[in-house]
Length: 468
Ligand code: HEM
Image 1 (spheres, rainbow, N blue to C red):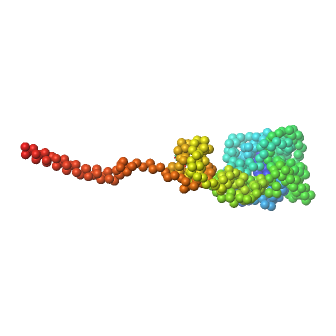
Image 2 (cartoon, protein in one colour):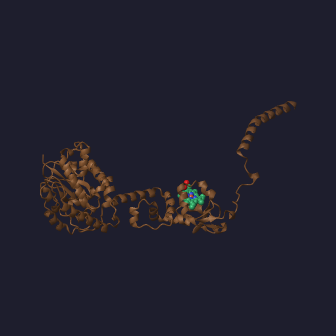
């Protein structure tokens, strides 16, 4: 069996996939994998059994050092990202399957094309006997999780000319190394015991790819532009050298500044993605329960308009969101507050297709723009003019949503004392057909009397016949 070790690829502190390189058969786990390994008793996940404790501790520190370089991540308050890594790292591996190279490629589908074109997918050292497992790989990948967490980081339309240091990665893979931490394929931190890693092949590849435009870029790519060269980051016994740490801090700061320039809303916020997700959740909620908004809109009266940054960072303030997300409802609510009182005659003038007002429950609605859209048709609305249409409206049994909808057409109130009495369409009393109760009685009476009458007539005929 071919000896192999694995290389882990990060994107903003996340494990995207393990890559493979020639060397002894141990596997250096990410922080997440290490945690998973410890928690799961180290053998359940199928690879953690190969991880030595000392190596784990070393890598843990290295991962911390790496994350400091990434810039946006506050290493001390890393909970969110740690969860993300843990999830991917734990569920990404199927313990029942051999840890062979094909099984390990649970690369994001969206990124695969890019990376293949950079020579990432197959290092050339792989065993070919696992090709059939390609389909299975998809099962390891939870698209929903990825969509939720990664997409906000993506800048698909951003045209850039950053050096694609990750190209020609095979050259690095050929070098014996236990583990190489990478940011989207860029080796960052060589680990203890690893050989010197040359960056020259990358740089030559960069030159070739420098002119490639319009490729997908992640935040990690942006920060990476400020990350020191790999050669400079060589660590001694798993510890970051003081001067290097200083340098990295400076890099971190400049990386953050760089990100701020490109992504204005980042500002001093250490968790912009979380905020973005919260905002999106709230927007969704509002879409589903728009009725709740009205109250909140009134709360916001007299407050200043929020800036875009406030919208992101001050997501607690529902009123701000309401104002910016649903201005139409706000306008409708504003209209409803100052209402005019009309005389009935005034309302009755608006009685045709191009100007149609109706009265329902003492309120006047201009339904002209709604005539064509009314599910009950425009005719019924046109028949409801010049009168109080309250009963007509209620008889239909309009839904709550119809009642909400009608507020958009509210124009004022009507002075109910000016509304003429409804014309009486009842027929005169004498022509009124007998009620069901009385007709039933007459029928029963006839049913009882008719046989008696017939019998009486028969006896009378017989009597007069005998007499003659
Ligand atoms: C601003 C006033 C009105 C609005 C916003 C409105 C809205 C609606 C809506 C949304 C529906 C679909 C069913 C539902 O959701 O309940 C509907 C159906 C209907 N509406 Fe109206 N309506 C208005 C006034 C009237 C009036 C004055 C009449 C007079 C009779 C009327 C007669 C009907 C009828 C007959 C239907 C069809 C019911 C069905 O097919 O089940 N509507 N209307």
